Length: 517
Image (cartoon, rainbow, N blue to C red):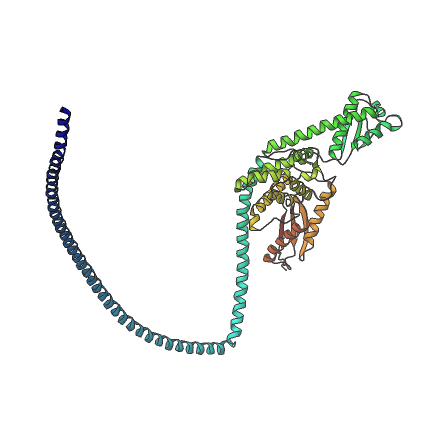
């Protein structure tokens, strides 16, 4: 029963609760709507007020921009007006100048007309004066002009010759002074000894009995020695001396060293000769290598191929006119380096070319051609710089030094090497000359001078370093004597080979003789 009552209550109360909840929700919703409407009205009011403020600000900004634009426009208008005023003033100035120029032009035209009239009057007066002068002198204008020009030409020619002579002497003095300073500095810093050029070597013997042992039974020892060494062994009546003769200095040095060893050993026979020659060859090879390395070290030349150093060492056994070729090459390298440093050239390249300039003499017995050409081919074979190759081949002027702008360095190196080689070869005591070659050179020197017209006598003096030429005064004038000296010097340079330089001294003497009666 109780349960039934509870169910009834639930059935009756459930719709009531639903109705009550509905009205309650409706009330709440209406409240929320009213609140939202109030907020919306507030927001609209706020937005409207902000909009008014923005519009006011925008109007203010627009007014400011408008005022600024008006102000700028006024400034521009003012500037334009100023420019227009300036242009008007300039136009007025230009117009004034134009008027002034027109006036000046008119005045110039008047003056030009006056000048033309004056020139015409002067021309007439000149023609009249020329006509009167021709009548007085008896010559036409062209004839007088020709005579005057000839006279002036003769005077100018003589003055020009004198001036040229003075300038040449001054230039020579300056050039010689500077050259002497540089060359003297180079020579003073270099000193080298000389040796006698020869193709034979002598070996001292302890006694004359040793000669028989050297010759051997039926000459077998001497034949074996000559066959192995490639030299001629001369055993003559000279006491306690035998002579080794050979044009190749290295072979001659090997033979001398081997013979000295055989004499000390005392056992001289073909087998022992071959053994000693092989030992001597090894010793000479080591000496050659050492000499080449010493030369490279002494001159400070770097980057040479080992075979080049060996060839350089062979020059120790070669002489030229009594001058040891290796010492000469070292000396030339030092002199060339000093000269190059003085004039600001490439010292390293020039010293390398100078050290190797005579390397062809190490092989000139084996290869045909001049030593300069052989030296060039050797340098090119071992990949040396073309500037160095050219300097080597041109050091005796067998080829002309290059003169192209691209080869300027080669030209400088060639000329410095020529100068250094000449200094080393021609300095006092450097070289000796055979009597026959010396006499022949002096005779050729005198013959060259005598071959010129007007030469009366010629004498080679100062060991061939000066040629004194006496001319006929009636055939050669003073000015022609200057030209003659230059012509003789040019012919000597062309036809003769000589160390150093030769002074050409032309003497013209005039004598006046009269008898008092």
